[in-house]
Image (tube, rainbow, N blue to C red):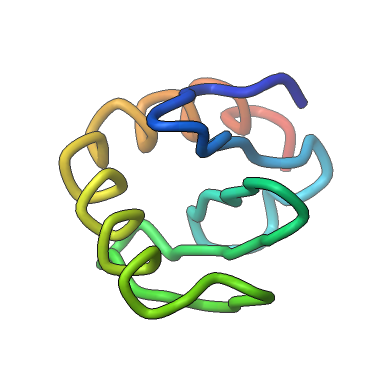
Length: 80
């Protein structure tokens, strides 16, 4: 899946076969990776990001939550 959002070097995306999971977003940057649930915003998984980076990413996810949820629901509606 192409990136939905790129902010300060972070790439936000989801995979096309994930529609059965609760809404979430993946974040990647320089070989590091995290996954955040969107309802509510919460860290699901982290590989390599430091605490201060996760704080920054959580803020970006929270600020863009409505946009990310819209894209999630648009993409996965009817695919289940």
